[in-house]
Image (cartoon, rainbow, N blue to C red; front, side, top):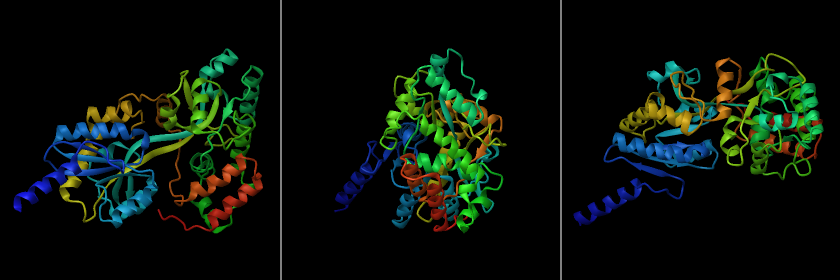
Amino acid sequence: MALFMALSLSLSMTACGGSGGSADGSTAGNGGDGVSFTIFNSKSEIQEYLEEAAAKYSEENGVNIEVYYSNDTVADHLSVKYASKEPYTLSMTDAKDIYTLGAEYGYDMSGQEWVQNTDYAITVDDKVLGYPVCIEARGMLYNADAIKNVTGEDFDPASITTLDEFTAFLDKLVAGGMEAPTAILKPDWSLGAHYLQQVYEERADVDGFVEALYGGTADLANDAKFNSLMDTFDVLMKYNAFAAGPISAEDEQVHQKMSEGEVAFQFGCCWEWNDIVDYDYTGNIGIMPVPQSVQDEYSDCLVGGGSKYFYIDNSEYTTDEQRAAASDFLNWLYSSEDGQKLISDTCGMVSAFSNNTVTCSNDLGNAVKQYVDAGKLVPNYEYDPDDHYSKVGASMQKYLAGQIDRAALAGEIEQYWSTVTPVEH
């Protein structure tokens, strides 16, 4: 009986620590008989790279790492894991989750060296709980090669700042033979969490404005920033290559037209690089601030900052040895040559740490880095309710489809905010 139980335990441990993927998206890196810990990754585009890095790290450091990914909402997924008493040792979340789940379960990393080499760590109650994975930014993507093919001239993004200048340039492209020079991503996350989000972010008192939305006293229909950004959105819609069916266009179609130079402009984010280069990429795709009718201190800036954060679980279900191993892994990402190359070269992300001098392999990331270095990033607003982008994004989709006008859109957004609970931060 003792031999049978030992054999069963051995088989069970082998099944849990194997190198193959599991049904819920995990991949294990088997590094020997050392401590085992789990990583939750919420950036789908780097899952394969993170799995490979974890396997290599495991082999070299005598630990066992399993990397998981889920399509579920991050907060919901992690809440289920805590409810089942099986939290991940190391979790990659959005910033707002650090203020909720991290504040309750996060391990204090204040004494780590990396804290002194970033401006993007998240501190809650004097405890450093959030390790920044990378920097990302949003703006107007442009295809410089596609533009030059039409105009015969090198494109200077600094030559376009106002909406009138942008509209005149689009007319120039149309006159030169580019029938529809813009494209619009239709998902709720792009319209609600990225484009409309700028209405909150590009103002001096962001919290005050959001409090007015919560309180039902904001007047979006007469708000200068809302109307400025919606004026630009109207222009994007007017010249949209998918104007005949704007909410039928798949992301892949938009990215292909952008990649191959059929369109010249698309609002988006630097992380879309991996999607764009999947096609017959022309080269020279960059990112610039969104041209607007209102000219203010944000006119020459992108919106962005730290994107995705790791926190180490400090609950009773994680051991001190696992926490130490997870901390060592984060320090490896921060300080080792292999870790720095993983972030900047392999994954093509902009490092959040000043000691990482590896050139970003992502052209859009390199462009973002220039704005970072120049101090030209408007900070992300990270404290929307969990259902914000799905609800407000749905209203933006109706506007894109021509089902509601701007006044109705403003009313739906105001109605949403007046019925949700403020997010503490």
